Amino acid sequence: MLTRTAIYEGTVRDGQEDEFFRRVRDELEPFWRRFPGAVAVRVQRLVSKDADARSVAMILEMDFPDQAALDACLASSIRPESHAATEAVMRMFDGRFYHLVSEARTLQTDERA
Image (spheres, rainbow, N blue to C red):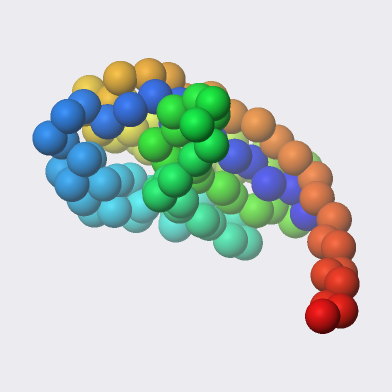
């Protein structure tokens, strides 16, 4: 499983937080749900951070079963539409967004008391 993560590093402009996240939900999430090959999509709005952490307003994660599925998604005709919509919403955001691709393994937790 591969996860493509978009990090929205920066801050939403003062007084525009509700509008920003409403537009993410109403305008961007419909695109993200339509990406071919994605088996899960997670949108995370940060609620707290370490004092010395960089400001991150949002994290978007999309899971893909393999590199071929991720490549198909990136070649999809939906991507330019999604990017244009993202650029419009980002006018309320001071910062940048960038992508990372990772492969994870799940660890069993130690449930001892």
